[in-house]
Image (cartoon, rainbow, N blue to C red; front, top):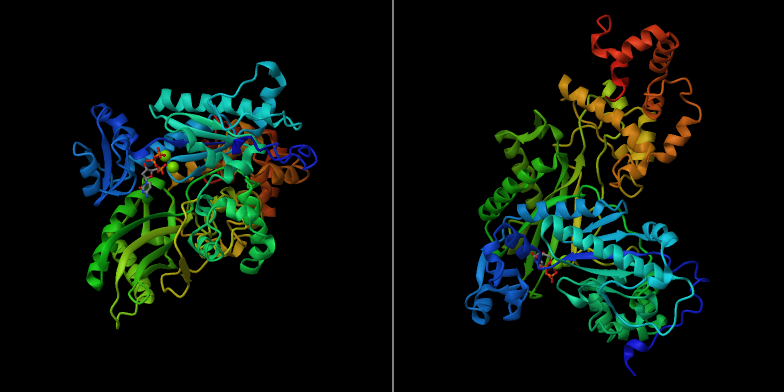
Length: 606
Ligand code: DCP
Ligand code: MG
Ligand code: MG
């Protein structure tokens, strides 16, 4: 009997509280870098094409793959199997990042949560959209678009087959739109969870999509020959499993839980077991700006400090371009090294990071720049971190250096400025990346590329650290509640506010932005992208209950409630006097008697 026909029992679908109720799509671009080059230059379309970084072909188009050119092949080997391979240098990632951003934007058009994974993959949770479409669907006409992993012998009573059929149609529409608007072909996987959606995605590549029903999850997993195929299993977990002779996913399925518990924590053992059976309940998390912006350079070996300095200097130049494009002001830098361990014939990564003064960066006409002196300061911090990672009195051998900005300040305001009150979204974007990147724990699904063993230390002793001015208690509370996910900022004390560097024009922009946020908070579905404001609905409700019942309709009540009591009173008394209130509303900048009046921040949107 064909393995695929062995279905796991589905009689309890409804009982396991909607285990199958989700509909997840995973989309991966075909030969991504190569496609970007082919769209840019149609002459490359019909020739075997390889994208070269250093001496490696990082990817190739499917024409070249037909000759046997595979991902990460040495250029010399690739040219042996395909002498007429056309090579394009792909070391400048700018156009790939841009393409990646465009695909993400297209996918956001469906107004469902979209989680970006690396540059060419996205998860989309279409559960609610499917529910909506199901209301008007003719169930007899529903078909799976694209490929189905295996025909089911019976309908699942929870209705997941119909839901996934609709999801497959949505996936097809998404892929069509990406192709029509951007010219890229893609693959998609459709399943009731992220794990299966990702793993089934490449089954019929290129330019195709595959749906898998929940009953076939365990069966499909058993076809994967290495436990490493499971996204959250990294090298350490794999080594530990191999030591127990657990090599394939089916080995893991069959391994007794008690054995796993001897080598992993109880939670992790259970999780490994569930994953091997195709079970995963991790949510699709809406992506925003990246938590860190970094670059790495790998090489055979570098053993001289001055060479390391040159490598870091070159990386810094490129990184500053990326940071300028991003627009946020970095407040932390991380240095990563991969050290060759001669004794163990292996290598491992180590990182160290330090806070940096936001004053190194200057905002000029909205553009982030760093002066020559600022760059020297950054290099001094980087080299100081380097010397903390490497004992220079002994020989060292590095095979990689990496540089990343890991925390960001969205905007800067003066500590007692009114903008501080109005801009309660100012925050350090992230305090992630402090944990070990290895796989000591897999409590949450990590779909990022498996990282080798590494460790990161935060260096808080750096002299460049700027004292953290106190923020008003109320604003901190709101920032914590509405702007930032729990895991992003552990405590308000981690928030840092820089010096006032906004000129009056920027200040006006800021106030407009703040007022715009009111609409976004109140109509979350109008803007599918989840940003710092979109978690606001709860806190908005709380605040609307009492703080500003008398406010005119154009006032952001949350902003109002974050103001000090005396300012609130000032405003309230103005609003009680309709003449002065109306005057301010219609022409805030003409209010000669109080040119810097707080009222100008409450102008309605035009
Ligand atoms: N990439 C890289 N180094 C790697 C793997 C990939 O630089 N070791 C880059 C090049 C790829 C892109 O990331 O184009 C996306 O990786 P994928 O694994 O999705 O590979 P492709 O999109 O190229 O091919 P496929 O059609 O198999 O998805
Ligand atoms: Mg791809
Ligand atoms: Mg990919």
